[in-house]
Image (cartoon, rainbow, N blue to C red; front, side):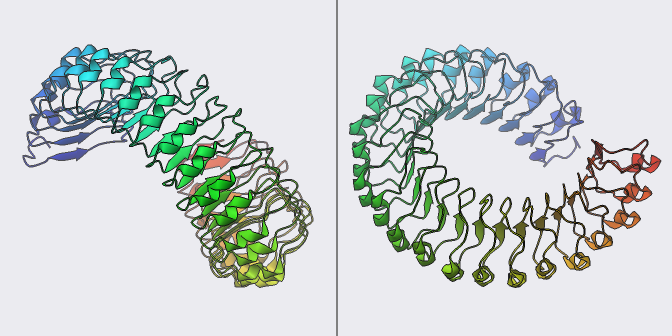
Length: 574
């Protein structure tokens, strides 16, 4: 291959048995892009320094690569170097001579505790990613990198403060210091006029949003989730360009500041997982707001009135609060296409207004306390994802469900159904049906045989003793879950006809054998037979399942496995 004079791109990534870079690569004089990421290299040939045209070198995720070769210093055309996810503990000082290097990715080198001083010589550097290393500081000279616009420092757990040089980086557009150990941000950062994205999330000692943020006039995205905030500066209302604000999982944040009403560009606000009991009424005037996440605020007992005025809202998540009802006026939210109400344990019925939400495509009301659904819900013509799971008092479905012609996914797991409407067989687009853990359901509904688009069926955890033979006609079914049906006793013949099946789980049934004909399931890759106490042997046909990668036979009563299984080259046995 070294004689391929015109070859300029060579991708060898993710060859797990490749332990060295082929020597012939040194002869590929036209090479501009070499990707050997995700292999098993421990070194790079010194002769690669002769590749004068190489401008992209990808070495990421070679876990045995502990140092960079000296030849990298000679690659004068290099513009991008990715050595993330290796095992480096240092970077060569001579790399400062790489005058054209614009992208340097060093992330997830867990032994890298400092950056070399030579970094301040990389005058063309625009992006530096050292996230997930073990840094406790960065070189002061980095302030002289005039073109640097992205600095990623996230998840350096020993980084307790930001260096003063950051205030000098006038080209900055993105700074990510999430998941460090900061307790403050430098006030001088307010002078970073071009900064548009600032990520401070998961700094557990950060107890307040720094006042300097009010001066960041170009800021469009601010993430301070998972810190320890109890308030937000009122002056943040002056951030006229801010469209994405994430304050989630600040457990001491008990109120949303009134200044949020002034953020006229805001399109997304996430205050989930805080300790709110209300939001400012003036938020109804945020004309561009399309996503509002209020989930897991346990003291929020009602949906704020102002939400009725948010005409641009497309996504509302109030799951995991303490709501007992939903505002009827919400039916006027003409653009709402995703409504999450799950895990509101005091919600015992759905409001009539849901029938008016003509744009609704996803509705999640799992884990509430519903005992019925609205008949008029059949009018939701665009609804394609309906989650009703874990409503323990839900004993039947309304007939109107068969009118929801756009439905592709229905989750009814963990309810108390004993049947489903036969008309559901006419849901031509339905591809996922989850019925698991309905303890009163003693047979698979006959209508399932008509669901020609079905790819995933979960009827685990029932009291089934058989499966309808007609299910063999489900030509697209690729995942079938029958586990923990204690009376099932045998895998029925119809399963042999499911030619598209990729995943079959019949663990915890009461099987004593597996049908020989299952060897014809050519696409089957996952087979779970665990905890069948009467299963004493596996059929010879298993050796015909050439696609099998996972076989779980734990907790059975086997004393041997078929010899022919040794020919299943992809198999991992559990």
